[in-house]
Image 1 (cartoon, rainbow, N blue to C red):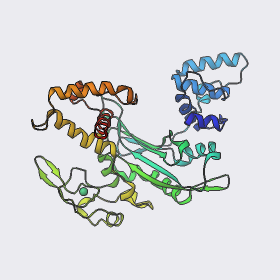
Image 2 (cartoon, rainbow, N blue to C red):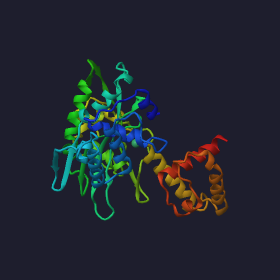
Image 3 (cartoon, rainbow, N blue to C red):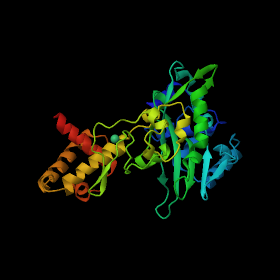
Image 4 (cartoon, protein in one colour):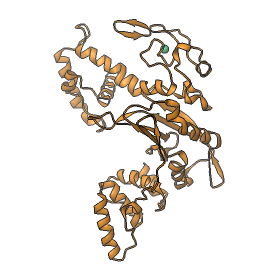
Length: 369
Ligand SMILES: [Zn+2]
């Protein structure tokens, strides 16, 4: 769909703009054949080629020299070709962490300018925000915490994710206020003022923030999800049963934007959250995360019970074999991005969320039939 849009708008990607690379990369990676797009200039084609095939800088410099010697107008150095930024404002955070802020204006505005003819200025663009930690290596605790933003209510931006800031360190950012400081200032300015494009103001609002449970409690600056006051939806106190905290009440007072900001439930909060600086309904915006709660939360527990649970709920060998056979028969009807769930996975409980989603899909299919 995105490729069609790119071709439809006959984009002439400029070479003096870092975001051309982003657009080129996305457009090129989505191509169904191996050809590079024909509607790009020589420099853009070279950029796409370098990004697509991960060509080494030495090789690119060599080919640039050959092309230059043949009289072609190409840069002499790969860094000029790829518009590698010469200066990075990397700030230190804590004793061993660093943070770089790219910003909305630098990351999103050039892309909006490219698609200006396809934008409806009467609608407010909704932002989806994701903040999470990602390990970089198995041999060390090196990790990054990117702040990622997407535009969720405009079809042409469906495939784009914009990194707005990235933290790197050997552990998670030491202080949530410091980590999100620049991002919150930048975001607040965007929500208040929008972007002016060709004399029109384009407005923004936050659609949702999705984070896994540890990142969510970190950003909200509240107790962890397994604490007695760890429920982000209601204010009940959990009770400790069979080595876990459980929330058994069903009529507890729900948390609201006001109760959160006024810290009505004192035991829930660790301190102020940077999100309080934004003109948003915090409780509505920071939503429950389907993948972690359902796919690799409740569903994973159910699968564990069916495979390793007590006898009265455990599937027998024949049933597991039957499920495996059914899954193989269903293969032709399942998108290729879903890995197949085999008996092997059921037996070893080596479950990845995609397999679990697949299992959900299958159980839904059973229920429907
Ligand atoms: Zn609750």
